[in-house]
Image (cartoon, helix red, strand yellow):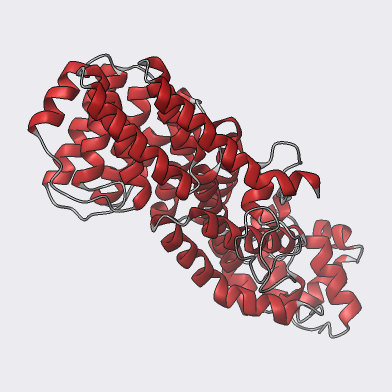
Length: 424
């Protein structure tokens, strides 16, 4: 562990679980190095233990109950299970009816490994089980604090805390420790990591963020938690949209609306669907989505980062520009002044870039230049290359050469902060 150390590339404080001198954000942002922490694929047998019936059996810590649950889930006879374990049918029958108690560690470990069971549910513990139990206790807090950090404009800190936690959860799950609580934490960790990476990575590497949210969806599909499934569908759809997979994004967001158990979740999904439809150049779907978003917002069913008046206004303006109605956007921006503050620093940056685009369309180049320059300064300080790249495109397309050059210089400075990671 490198607790108390700083990243050799950017100077960020390293997580207590860091094993490298470079923080995960620098590692993920550097195209010259392979991506760290790629998650192994969980075997189908391991997913089986995430079902509610299996979870109940595992919590019992009773071998007879677990074996009977395994047979029901896999539709096996005692004779077939005996063949899997290398025992005879009578031996399995005696275990299931509790006429035979298995007390030796070797046999219990063999049964656990053969059936894809977490070994500790049968009383077989490894040397790091106690450490992992402690990690599970604070893992949820780590994820929640990382989300607070991201929403407060410190996405780099969020990535650097989440990466080592998720890596340990991935490794543990691949070894067979897939109780429901572990999978819930893994799913939340994957989703939070993907969203945080989607905030700090440049556009050419945003597919990495979508891969992580996609892995979160694999877990969410199996947990039977509609609220979490809807959340992951929203986040995965948004990361797919940012990676320019618009049709896939729209499909995920449509499904998120359908499965959301509450109005605030539906509103957030409509917000992201409006964004995706706008970028896809689909004015009909954009108008429908933004209309539903407005109706839900007016009904005052909660608030959130994606479900609030400031975000609505930015998404509405940007979608109008993207669907060829820049004049409408300019009129709305001139008459419908923002009546709320952004819920997060990055949303102020996003809004400034959008405002610059609208002002360009309205012919107010001076005001557009001011808005884009303000976005550049803040985006660089928060290490948001995607927003810098948005600013460069807006400036280049309208002949604001000075702003575009300032944006390119900001990107170079961000890349230079990563150069020690490439050389090490």
